[in-house]
Length: 110
Image 1 (spheres, rainbow, N blue to C red):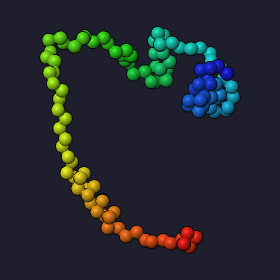
Image 2: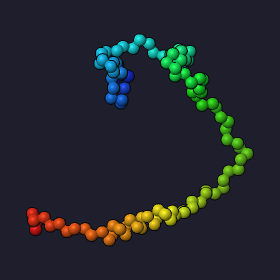
Image 3: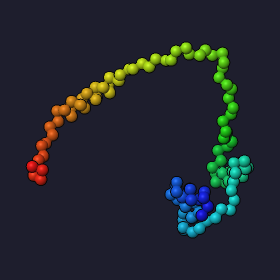
Image 4: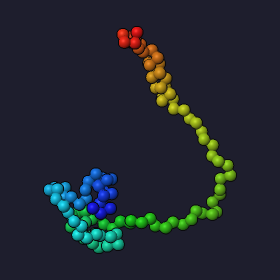
């Protein structure tokens, strides 16, 4: 078995060279590479899955504007407590503190 097939089997727990319907052996007839866009379009159109042209690579972007001012000091972190969450936590702690725990004595350890 080819290395790529073993890796797919290990990761996805499915044998890529085994027919999912009958369990028979399958073989690779042809590989389609990304640069063969016309073949990919034809296959996807045949199955009704072609959504039109999409951009597959990010377009280059310009460097940051050098004229923009650089921050002179780091931003301050502001702590804002969530009153609702704190109240819920206090209620939960109070309920647990008031809960009576049954005392179970195991004769084996007495």
